[in-house]
Image (cartoon, rainbow, N blue to C red):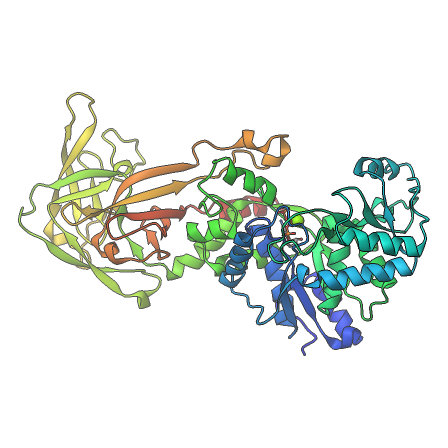
Length: 562
Ligand code: ATP
Ligand code: MG
């Protein structure tokens, strides 16, 4: 086992290295990723996944996937399946270590019996509301439950009958007997078990009592011989209870809980509860809507596992809560695809161009390299003919001085083809809109041939007769505000224009692509073939535009000395 981390350092690695250097936990490193199967995983979970699996890999240890399925009312196998698919897609493997907290229900029940016998837990008949009232406040102590001093025998009998289904839901709970005056509210006789008649996705109707997270979690860690139990900071106040549970049950080599700051991303919400609202109330098309911050949404959008892992590495691991600009995530996918994505020509919003001096029946096949920075990607042939389409925004009838694209009397180069000059336009008589741009081309300027002609602009284009129709979906942020959670109802900050659907034209080489394939559409961004795409209807999602706002933010930061 290696004792030194290889990647960039963080305080958790310091703790693990220190533990190994003193031979703690018999020199083992064992972590776990413990999702609750009550929704799809999001980019915040990716941070936790990379951290837990990453630590295990770096130190030659193990990482389990454990479903924390102790609350059957909200859980579902659909989520169990999607979570496994997402973790695998991110590039991590749990071998044969797939576990469920529900696998331990019997053991957890027996441990509870031990606590009762040791006088450390009791059955309480107070109603949920009374329990709340007895608990006290942040500034004032709580009050002992009148049931706190039941005998061990009575507690054992009542707990057994709770399990046997003799009492209605919510009528009794099992509580830890700790300290109702503790400054930490979590230590004021927390509930360990509740009665709840709900069918569990794995244990069916076997149980009508279910353990609480704070009780099940440390023991699940202990049963799996986890050494470092990494969770987010909101559990810091629960750590004394985590340690209490393990101590009172005499767990040898108890796991250590370590908290880190959760990821918050600008212009989105991250809690599964809120994401579920967006899905159930129809704000998005599903958990995998390409605008969602879910792993499945990012995958459908076209993000690569490499880009997401790179992002998780760059944001680092710290104790202080932080807000990460979504531009940084976009920067990571651009960096990844810049080199490996073939660059092709697609006209998102077509405007017709006619080359008046090009023979009507002629078609030239032009050689076009896929990526000038990565010649290994090779090239394809692109048809050129008299009638073409260019991007509407690449033509202006009355341009400002610094417009280096096409306008009457001016010249541009068509990528991989010729220099053309705009001679005149045809307009729609009613609307005045330009419908055709008439040009001439210069045969001596064919791409790849030596020429001393200089033009400032190079445009992408497609041949009208050869182009293939495609639906192209452009996305912008789901939320207008940087932090949509600032408002009571986060949904008031939704961007109503977060999806734009275009009827576009793609070069014919794209007709054979497969769902999931990624391309750079020259000048327009990175795009991915949607799973709904077929031979009859091509559908592309824009992953990101080419403009790297993160690089700009960084530069501005450097200049202000930040
Ligand atoms: P949510 O509030 O989104 O429902 P959760 O914490 O309830 O999240 P779990 O399924 O319990 O979701 O989380 C599994 C693991 O992922 C936990 O260890 C949790 O701390 C971690 N995790 C969840 N959200 C984030 C986040 N935004 N950043 C980092 N880690 C996270
Ligand atoms: Mg949770």
